[in-house]
Image (tube, rainbow, N blue to C red):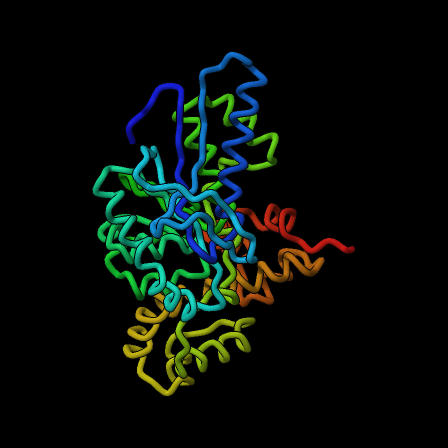
Length: 335
């Protein structure tokens, strides 16, 4: 990314139906940082700027809630970075269907990439960058609930949805809308001034050091293609999760061989049956930590484990938090 002393211009791709937070969030971070810099030094030559840039010559766009936003400017002007926002969708099928309507934006991404402009995509905006072919062979992330759909559509991309932000060359991808705010603050710290980025984060109550989406991942909300064997396996596992389970028993219940079951899980879950069972146990533990006052030993027993120490290690590996820290952060408080 070429550096221009004393200035940073971030373009935001103008797309109909964009999530408003993906558009206005980064704008607010940059504007507040500029204002803080001016308050600290009224004579500062620093110029931080965000501009909406469009692929269709439009004057304005309507965000996901119908709010009109503008002005939209030409992509011909110099940019240090282009942010690709997420867009509203009702399902994975709807998300993919909407890609076909973003043809001009996808072509613009290819053109700007050839021009050397760094590109950052937030939330499902990563699908546009992948659709343009720019992420092939690169590491990337996306919103955690889109994990399976992204892997299925873009198998050449090395996806890691547990990471909040993934930078690979001049291509960056982030998780859902608020993750990009942390990235913009990190960019300000690297390119402008760490102290200014820190003050901006404090003013906006943003933690720019979040590294992982793991604590937020919920398998129940993850979009996955429906399959009769998957549904049969999920139903059985949810009922029997409180006890020890074997792959042979699961295969027998699903009416298939262990080898076929392994192949199915690799194809549909990108993991082994054993790993998936462990994920489900962690998910149950998360739900119990959030909604009950059960002790950790009681929760471990309800999750089909007998060794609390081993399960504590599994839980922390899966969520990046200890069970106590998870309960502290996510437990449901009485109204």
